[in-house]
Length: 394
Image (cartoon, rainbow, N blue to C red; front, top):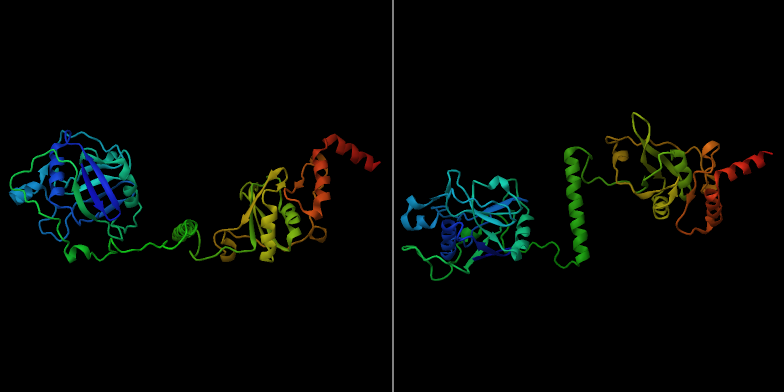
């Protein structure tokens, strides 16, 4: 077993010494020689694997222990074709194939389960202990460039051999103490591994989560801008437009205008419909003249029952109207309003009479009596309403 002390945490590796003895011998002795000290994790393929084991500023490049003993002729060794171990586990460790069926010092660790594409190409010789999986996840989350190289260096600082069942090969040099890094090994032109770039330093957990949420939202808007869904990543949605969803298909523009006009002047109100069938898509946009009225409607109308459906209300995140982008949101001047801007319960004639009522969940003093009347009407059997109507006609 080996412990890799990295700049993001310790990685404990359990070796398959019986199943892959030559690979384990090579890896153990390289660790004992401190060959991996200060090497970078130079390729991180998110949710797949990362590679390491290439020495920096070393003319000899990656090589096995036999390259140290026999010179250039022993730099690589043949892949063991009898090694049939699969890359099934998260944290599987294997020697990297140089493309010619040869291994040196480079190795990879998987960041996913069932990395089948690696089977038969790279030789599995161990796995990362479960207690070190969190470190692998940190590496997986590293910010990388297009070449999968982390912007901030992640490096192996030290290696500790915990258990070595193999004898030391003759002629293999071992240092008396851990080597000191050379300046060129630490200056890679990227953010140093020991540089503190914690953007959440001094923040509470809630503040850090909010900062992460904003950063992710900004990233998502930049993607939307690149694919052409929005004109500008910095564009802000209007603060006087409400988004209303979960509508009953029978609810019309006029119905919503009448109901929401109690909170202020409405500039436009539209239920979005299918272009071909003209059927309601069961959501709408309502534009108020004043943001204050829009905010009041947001707090009062969410989860209200309209036409037997509990609606959901939120501030619009659409920027289509302001920028005339893709979707044209038509603005129509309000033609009619409820008396005094209040809420009018719809009274439709015919078979649907009395079917549509609106009920508030919160207690609004001005409309308590109206709500009680509307509830009684909605609970009344249709035949009673019809008989009442007949008596009114008489």
